[in-house]
Image: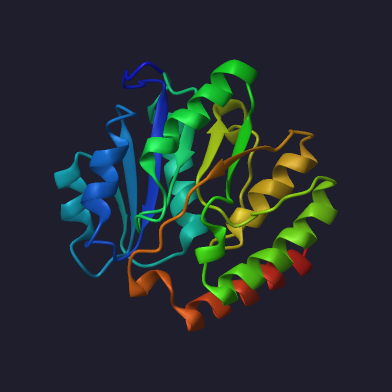
Length: 227
């Protein structure tokens, strides 16, 4: 990348009540990607204002619809309104991902032409909360069996999607099951799932919510078994 800001890949950040850190996530992401899109999923705080202050284009759901719905809104916007975009890099709005690692995804895409690149939280994985780690391991094992490829971190939200892949998607999941659905869609379309190691940072109590993690795990497994 040589320090240049990339124009043909869009940053996509789904966010819900992330006023505390979303401005920094956006501004750091804009050091690497010219266009950053935040989909505010019905936040009750100042997420919209903070995202705009960081330099993002903001789309807003009037009510909370779920991460899957937020990603779909972002995907649809890019496909319809950003004809120059060759792909999207998604990352979470809570600051757990390191925008500096965006360069890894871009380099992998430009060198190998991958349509889906999954960031696997390996470097700092031992710091992941236990319930989240156990649930991720369970779901990742199920996903690995389904796609015929070993997937270590199926629930990572730090990913690259090519336009080619997005044009073939028909997402059903509105909630956190979307992370799994995207991998299953790749396998169904015979699209290899490339992986790269990434760091993860849990910076505040909202990122370590055991009741929330349990609900997420249960909803993912229900959606997975319902297929």
